[in-house]
View 1 (cartoon, rainbow, N blue to C red):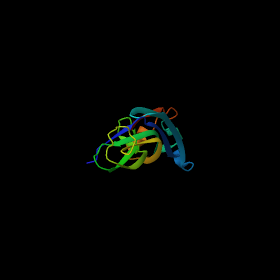
View 2: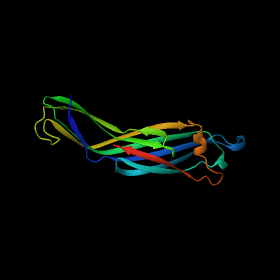
View 3: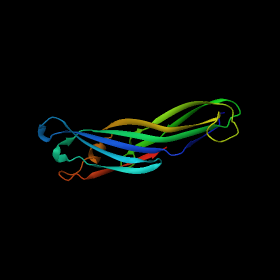
View 4: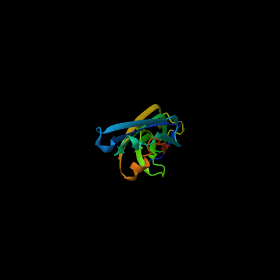
Length: 180
């Protein structure tokens, strides 16, 4: 059995969503167009719950036919590990954050997981819990980026959820969580 301790001293995360809404003009007018919106959450310590607000689609422009979501995440920080084993061991350390964008009812739209992986070979525990020496390590200045996309209308109710009133569409607020 491998016994290790790992510490994420400070993991910082940001997320960006681009919501792309193709539309078909009412009455068979011009070809399909796109309306794009972007929001972001500033870099901050992980294990947070925030939200992003976007304009709803204005049906005066035509009919909403699909929505593309892109969620990007960036993490920064450090990771440390110390083997407490009595013999040499190889340890895999993942420095990551799970970033999730949901609908207002908290059903998941898209998840992205920025990750940096380290494989370290340690000697037997040297008797000092210092995340250094021959039985430990500290990885500083880590950064990782990831992006993931999803498309709707799955479910079809998303087209209604993201459509407002003609000429006064309003906004929709989407919860975002990050766990490190």
